[in-house]
Structure formats: structure tokens, C-alpha cells
Image (cartoon, rainbow, N blue to C red; front, side, top):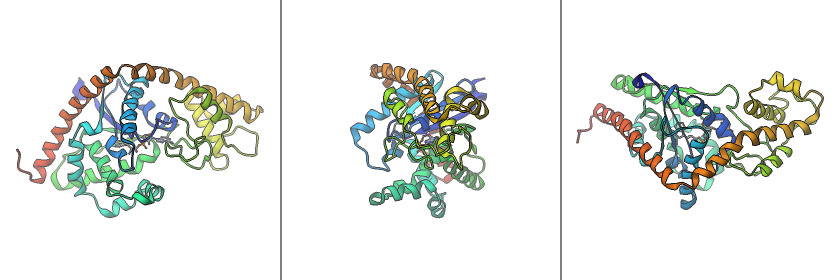
Length: 333
Ligand code: TYM
């Protein structure tokens, strides 16, 4: 039975604390599907160094992210949880795939354009090549689905193109995966500039809500959220991006539809609505924060989880890598 399960895979960069966006756009979806799929989730530490990091902080965030994954409902007995740099086959396949990816394709990646504008002093080759490593992360586990937020869709599409190109030359080596994007929560916007995506690299600390943040700080951010000059709670992302974003968050936190939310807050004004969204988010995050804090006290357990995860992941990854090496003509060792 186990062998027939579909495979799901995804990762998050430990480049900052986990955000409400990463949770609603990605992790929540992962946890909901853990029983149906054979799942691989990792901390994308190799991607993180495309931007300069403080080494001690990167180590701390990587382990803290693992604790948060488990606290979000990813049972290490049912999901393979690991650290990307512990499985060298990702980088090895990445090199091969570099030779099947076009320069022009990489120049079209919107995240590369945005990040090179943000880090103009350090537009390194890794930043440019990042989507190829991501394609290797994915293809090496032969997944059916890649659950990500809307902003990663372009990278998954490039991954599909690379897989199809490679398969076109050598036969069916890679499964061509589908992005798996939630209907609600795929693009959570900044609370302070709702035209922009909520992001861990947001310059305004009030724009980004962190999953493990103190509830009082979270409440304050929601109270200060930028809205518009009307008073009606109505879903209209073009004309009312702030309110629509808060509705999206509230819908995720409570399971209510936009119609239900409009009725619930009819005639109540923005103040009450913002407080309700803040309260619902705090309650959604509370058990995750408490469980993460508890898990972080047990470093030996976390180490055991990522060690076992790397072993299982390496086994599958090396199988794909051997096949690829053979196809391209490398002499087996
Ligand atoms: P990253 O670390 O930027 O984001 C992690 C996940 O969270 C989603 N996300 C959001 N979803 C909704 N609203 C937002 N504001 C928001 N911000 C982030 C992202 O879409 C993503 O799913 N390149 C990836 C990491 C990665 C990866 C992979 C993912 C590396 N290798 C292989 C899947 C498969 C990244 O930087 O995500």
C-alpha cells in the first residue's frame, strides 16, 4: 500500500522567522495532507545562503523551523523531515540540471529580479541559479505535488520545463510534478502595504506577522493594519486590498466564507473587524507557538528527527541521482 501513495514535497528557507504567509500558503496544506501522501519537507538552508547570513542565527533558525514544522502537525513518524544540506544529492543533481536549463529562462524569474534589486551589492551566481537547485530539490524525490504559495508557482513551472526537457532527451527519468496551491491563503499580503506580499524580508516590522510571535505584538499589528477610507467589510482585492487581505486571513483562521464574513461584520466598522482577525489569528497560532517552545527544549529529540529524516531522504535521492548519472553518461563508481 505504502508504495502506491502519491508523493508530496516542499521546503521553506530558514532565512527569517516563519511568517503567517508561509503557514497559510504552505505548511497548513502540508499538515492536512500528511495521511494521504508520502511526504518530504525540508529546511532549505542551502537556498538561504544566496543572501548573506549570520551563521549562528542560520543554525538556530533551521532547528527552530523543524520544531515549528512538527508543532504545525507534521508528525515525523509519517513525514520525512530533514535539512537540505544533509542530503548532498540535491546539489549534485543541481549541477546536472544546470546543464539543461537556459540562461534566458533564469533571467525571466521574477523572484531573481526582485531579489537582485533588493540586494544590488550581492547579485551572486547562487541567487541566479537558485531555481535550478529548487528543481533538483523537487525532482530528486519524484513527487506528484509541490504544495507552495502563489509566489513559488513560476519556479515550479520552470522545474516542470526542465524535467520535460531532460525526459525528452533521455526518456522518462523524472515525474513531472504539479504545483499545489491553496484556494484561500495562497498570497497573504503585508499588513502595512497590502499591495505587497507579506515577506520575512519586509522592511516595515508592522507589515509581517510571525507565526511564533508574542500575542500582544500580533494584536498590535492587526490593529494598525492599513485599510481604506470606506467602512464596509467587503471582498474586493483591487479596490480594497487591505480589507480583502484581512478577510483572507480571517477565512483561513475560522474556515468561514467571504459571504459569511461580510454578513458577520455588516455595519460594524473596521475597528471591530481588525480586532476579530487579530484574535482569531492569535488563537490559531497559540498551540503552534506553545508546542514549538516545548519541542525546542528537547534538542536531542530534534537531532534524532533530522538525522533519521536525512537518512530516509538520502536513500530516495541517491536512487534518482544514480539513474540520472547513468543516463548522462557518467561511469558508475
Ligand atoms: P519561501 O521560504 O520564500 O516560502 C516558503 C513557502 O511559503 C509560501 N509563502 C507564502 N504563501 C502565501 N502568502 C505569502 N505571503 C507567502 N510567503 C511565502 C511560499 O510560496 C512557499 O511555499 N524557494 C522556496 C523554498 C524552496 C522550495 C523548494 C519549495 C526551496 N526548494 C522545493 C518547494 C520545493 C522559497 O523561497 O520559499
